Image (cartoon, rainbow, N blue to C red; front, side, top):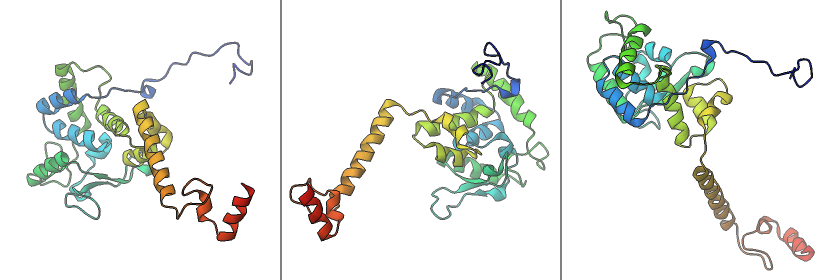
Length: 241
């Protein structure tokens, strides 16, 4: 704006701080298979949980067994995880379990004596972040993943796949616990095919709605809006036409 207002004579060059750089690495399904096949515990189960629920690493570390509902409740089919708190007020949410996540959690619960799902070596405190980071560093080197493949990439991969599954930005916002839909929009990249399918669904819905209107009016296309008017109003429109 300063350049537009002629306060300065050119656009400034702004260097971003390291914390402000976006890491956009997304794990492919082939990379995911290799990662989960060879990763050590607890990273293996932690990565799986983030890939299938989009948990932040802080939310994962603080997850307690009291937050895990393996038995279906209400409309859920496989249970869910309740996130009590997190990065913002929007972090509080329920996340559905995938079949493989439920199986993993059931297996961990059977051998756990801690309140936490992922613990340190003593089994009394949440797993330290450096434990996950050290294990991830070795996996990244072994699989030759790029530098921006960080633990957060599992959450980013989840969000990207959610967008590819045609989830809208507001749904992604709720599922990932974003505080604004602007953040969620980066995961929505509709392809031409997806846009065409959306138009197709809209047209089908319009045709179904019009087809359900009562009767046909003489001189007008079948099931037009005139069919919903009271008798006198419909006759007036016919005379005008």
